[in-house]
Every structure is written in C-alpha cells, then in structure tokens.
Image (cartoon, rainbow, N blue to C red; front, top):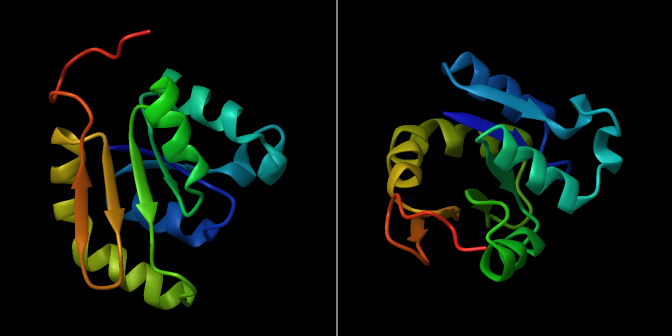
Length: 127
C-alpha cells in the first residue's frame, strides 16, 4: 500500500511503513516540505494513489465535500509519544491495510479502529 504521512506525524512513521514493506513518503520529503498546503497534499496523494495519514481532520472535510483525498488514515490518539504511535501502528497495520482496501477512511484511536465509507467499495468518485 502507498502512504503519504502528513507533517504533524513523525517522519519515523513513514520510515516504519517502508520497513514494513509499504511505499511511504513524509511531507518533509515534498518540494515545499512540511509547509505543503493540505490541498496540494490531497491532490498529490490521489495522483499517486496514496492514503493520506494525518491527525488533521480538515482532510476528512475535503474527502467528504470534494472526494479528495480519496483515502485517509486519521490518527485520533490525542497526544501520544512517537514510540507509542509506532507501536500502535505496528500492532494494527495488517488490519488497517485490510480496512483501507474496502473503506475510504479509517480512524485509529488508542483502543480501536473505525472504518468509514461514504461510497460503495471500488465505486468511482463523482466529480
């Protein structure tokens, strides 16, 4: 699976995802780095068929209103250490990937995963 990790999350998360066998980039690797606007991140993610990994619920608003980005992993843990975040992702990565293959948005809390979909799996986005 391909991921684009947003600025509020550690670069180590993207590195972990790569180590786990996925294609992942962090916004710090983009031409504007962590100053890349959310809209640009969403468009780039869709062009590259990536899931945006973020704490920023503004991406969910864009997803619902405009269908961009198409795929989101929202980290809804509140304040969490980098080590605890990486451990949480590691513990649930297989399930996250499975849910994202069927759902457009997965929300990861400290103690649960919630899958959201606003369209039938595999259905094209209207625009």
